[in-house]
Length: 328
Image (cartoon, rainbow, N blue to C red; front, side, top):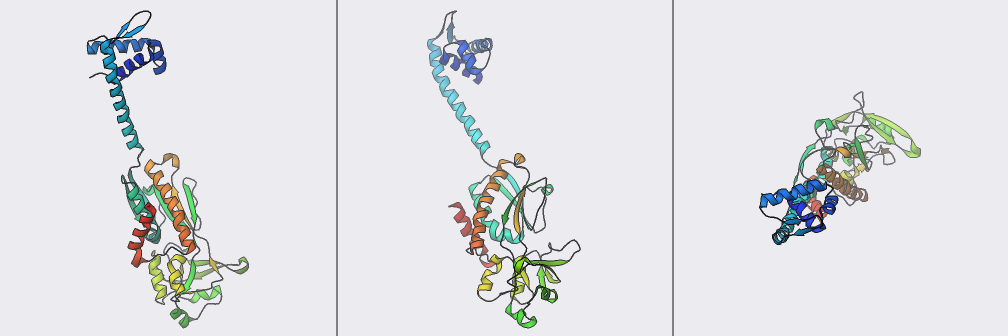
């Protein structure tokens, strides 16, 4: 089989009309080009170009061979283009860590749309409220916290609605409506297992009128990573709970839950998307980050506008509808 490089060299000699011009266009020595032409002619057993001291003359068989060389070189270029396009497509397996309820309500439809858009990417989703690390093998870590600091990692952050304190009318009729933050200390509460301070104590950090600040220690009757379980316990009258507005807005609107100390706000929470330096990211990971970040902004705007509804009983339908919207 003819060396494809020799075919290319021959075609360039014909096109440029001289060994010198062809060698300059290819960036090779004229002597090497002459040797390659001779090797091709020897392999074919015919003379393709008559060489004299004054000019080159393509033989009749050389002209016919050149016409076919163009076809071969174009097909070779097309084949290389196919390989390059395949290499350019994001592919591979990605491992993501995400908080429990955020994965159910917000991330699920985004990932569904992503998998539909990029069929050569596989996702391993670790659902946990415990902070994950890149050393655990994660490509992307989503985490909700007041502040995340890491000098070794790159972080994008998104503002979230502040959580609100809520309780059922049933509970408040039994224990009374708290009037001041200190009244919360003796009331039954719920908390995430990941929110104690360094001493293992649970506390709500509140910002009130005239920027007053108070830290109220409480003693949870219920500890769980699942905010939906906390919501259901609050609805049942078992606890006062701090919940994201998206999880309790419907219950507050219809009176099943009541805002407690509405003039006091809990501290700001942010969603952090953490990943190694982009310089070391695979194409698949970069594609995922861009896709997730773009659609998170849209979804979080819906949350803040009050148009996003999260419900476990409707999560499958809601995720499907939301994913369909993202694809369109």
